[in-house]
Length: 187
Image (cartoon, rainbow, N blue to C red; front, side):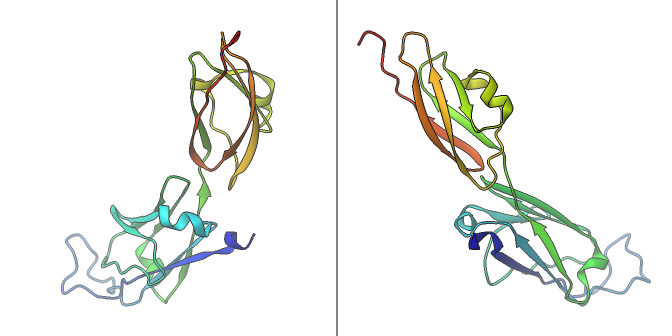
């Protein structure tokens, strides 16, 4: 899958030294004069529009032009934030020099299936792991499901007074909403 190798280069422009070191900084420590690059790997191209980077509390959209950040003697945390993928990278001041490249790995979130249907509704998903395939769950209590970058699950649903239904549910990492209309028995 070609989209899995997509990279986002986020140059952190840390090369502007301060006029004076911040309070508590070691005056013997040289100011940061170089920058570094953060590379995001494992994020599919279609997911790029729905995710952003949080750099020490400041959120910015992913872009090919890069991200300029003015920080000096502080540790920074870069987080990938979005509905389907997450990741985190902590950079220390010594890591910012020499044009170094740091990798922030995008990890798929566990899939959560939210079913809007009659109450109570029981669900059993085949191919969702041993736990899901061996027992019936109340739809409101379904555990998170590891679907990687996405897959389709075969599920069965049943509710008192309605005909059971088999369905195929396409799942992505993160929240997945399904509206389920069951046919009443005797109707």
